[in-house]
Length: 605
Image (cartoon, rainbow, N blue to C red; front, side, top):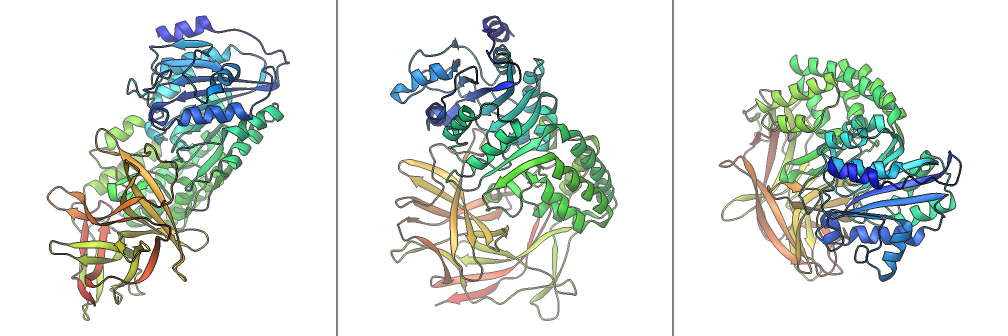
């Protein structure tokens, strides 16, 4: 509490010269972390903000707390206004000169008292009609925000709530220039402290929001209403050239209404699960638009709540009315939402996904977040039920040997046809496409002559990819993902290679979604040093197949090969390289248990 006391004592207490109701106060809490120490991303955004900003402080005042990075001038925390930032920016670097209002060398920006102290400092500037707080750093959805690189500390949702609750102020907007923070779990914590939430459902590109136009717009229109400002930030973010972007403006005043509708739906769904109607509920959860989804690593953070409600409305007749009420509530809850078109469906706000949560990790999840009593009870019942399922599905051949009935002791999640390349040691999957049952509920193994996608390097060499079907976006393109590693320069990162393929022409767009492994070996939704999500000439790309390892009950990554990307590298469709291949059906249940049909051999000569 010492830091909070010091900051309050240092509070300037000055008043804006304008009357109450005019002008804007913009406060940015920038936890630099590795984004600054490795990429200079914090510096870049502050330089952009300074370049676009021109308003006098009585019309628009900017106060920035920056620090939390292993870099000179970024350890601890500094507070600066636009004046100090402009002076500091003269040499193109923030933090390397003594231009600041306050400095706290020992501050931990992952401590709620530090955030509370900064908010108390900001609250000393009175008389502004609009008051915005932007939290800048890594986001991890329901797990929280920020990572002070010096201390290794972050801000879980309960600590975020405590920091805002320490003061009596209510802000017009709380925004997260961070990954994954547009979740109903986040809204439930922040609802008492702001009118609007501005955040992304998906992971954000490393460059984040567009601060030069934000600074310019606030300077030209310092009295613009909060909703107009929020919409402007969403639209300007969509101009960012990177792919896989979402951003939404949420009316926190409608949080209670959305939670009440979700609670009613949870009551019905729990009854369905406990009464044996597991499959339609599970498939809705399985196929809803997912975020921070890395299938090869067993990661999926959240699901789009509107898409989930729409699927439940169609799949679970007993829950149709409650799903409809939730859809209507979400329509009022989300004021404005956009994405860049590379998603099957986004409605603006997400909810935690149970796909990879087990009974063993449920306690960890519940320690991070709650939603509403009945939804939480359903979520827990769903996870506990699927986690008890240790039996694989059964594929029973019919008379022709190529058609199967598929059953499971609990429920079948998905049936796919898998294509494999045969090596001396194993069959390695290189593709998976869902298969629909016939009118009798049977699944047939379709014929295959060895044609599939591969990455053509443009120099006569090619690379097999483990492309798994993920869904379809609005323009009819099929979405596939493949696990890869990329060496760019002297840096290596894991990634999912997302392929958006026109099924009629096989033309495609390729987008890399980078991630790193944290100290515990778990995927983290960010990567150091990557600004461009395209395949670039000179990239060294290694593709992997993911196979089940029965000895460890974990998927194993096996390298399929490597290429160096050229200007002409593209995804091509046609007969695969000479070799031995096979294909067959895979049935998977909701707990990840898998069964294969007998493989059908294919020789490409």
